[in-house]
Length: 131
Image 1 (cartoon, rainbow, N blue to C red):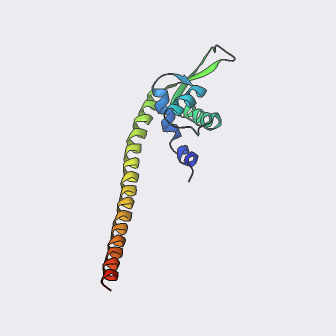
Image 2: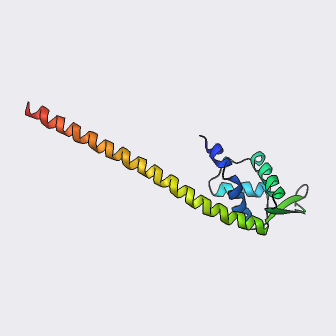
Image 3: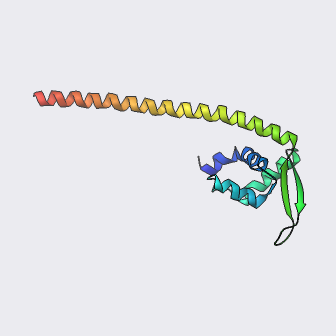
């Protein structure tokens, strides 16, 4: 699974978190997400999510003058958006904790298998040395 596919599932929550830091417009959100290491996000991927968030009344928008070009649409969280962000945080912590435990368990299991294999090799070397 690619990073962009994984990101689709959490993009709304990430956008809510960015908007929660202060009123912002689309391109600025991409720049802010890039500061956190999200380099694979394009304008084409966030605007449909922002539109859905607006329809779901998670955000409100305000048109403001731009120093260069047309007016910009600034996004702010609604009370419902703040509540959704809190739910996202809760779900994310639960999910990421579960995934981390699973991956750590897998890592521990591989380590155990490797140690067993090394013990067998060590035993074979001892046997070969005795011959």
